Image (cartoon, rainbow, N blue to C red; front, side, top):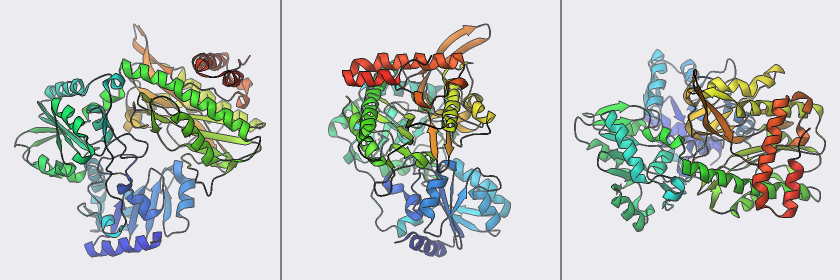
Length: 596
């Protein structure tokens, strides 16, 4: 079926159910950012493969709403279909619910799959749609009826994440969660998010590309916990270990029946932002639903000492792999054009040679020249650019290791950069250093820090359209809540930074059709000092790989900024060199040469 054929088939199904519009999100029943193939409904119906976006189909319009990270990609992927791109965040462009209100008649009916929308999302949409008495019907998955070759649910085997990496056993984690439940007088706690389930039960899987999670639900009560998962995916040896720790395995589909059978008058804690509509409605109505954040989300974000020490060693392994990659690339481009996809493949190969490697933490973004300006660009073998001649390369990549998750972006230049390119790179670097060197009072949120990353770009009338930082998991999702750095007080940007949190620091600049710049390291929140004005915190940079010296315009840097670069490069060399051969050490030393 072509994209337009799929739209037509959806409209037939909509007509049968008397829907005036149908909304298809990018999520799954666990409100995941990255989803298994079975739930790639938005991508299947539209052809748009970015990780964020929403489709709305009416009787006479098919629209995709996405943000500035994906504008260029979406334009390309939608151009041969009926779909129209709606640019989120652009002045005078309404988000999808505003557009629906303006486009549909009063008393219209909208269809959604209630498995893939949270109860909080439903409430928010319905509150807005009440202005025209538009109702939402959430019981129908219309995609299931028309997607004849829809992939089945994943069947990969889960495995235990050893305490020697995790730092705490599942029994210890369950005890901490139960203590917090007791404080709130909670009888049951439902966990829907896959990374929280993986963390709580010390399990990992391969159900979602690049995210080491297994499709499951978790439910915790005072003396027992339940893991709702396809039992065939759990080895018998692990079932025995889980049961010894008080964890009972039940089938994935049993979760709704179990929730309905919870005894009356019990108090069940659910997170309205991650609990699907269908799951929320399955809970025994005679129970009290207590709404709040999933307890493990913050616990998971604050890394323990064992996790931190493991990750620091993992950063050395990751830096070694990158040294090998960039040395190879520098030699190779002198002999032939190198496709972007080959760079990604070779980097994955070098990472795979490192101890305890599991896989990529996301598909590498290798953007040569104008492709670097596409924030979430993904090179395809048949259409990608080849690196040759003078130009700027943006490489954003990461690895999953049993002992940590990495995420790093470097922008490099082959040849002689222009004055404009050096200026803009240095402005981004100044913003990066501003975050890296910040000392701040406890309780400060990412939204209060974000201006430090952007102020030097703003001085020149420049900006970037994405956040400055996101939380990062430990052998888990590369994007992790609750914290982040970015504009606005809502969501992750409004959360306070806490000691033990690992966050990315990645300001950027993008000139459409020409080049992209991003400099990303992972930073750890640590204690600084306590004064009469309270507790102060700071960041410790964890990532170990040099920053491109040939793109720096020294005249724009302060002495403090120069000192940070030189000190950072000294640390990079000191920690990576013992793991390199002599030729690699020489290469690294040249990249880390002191700027005077």
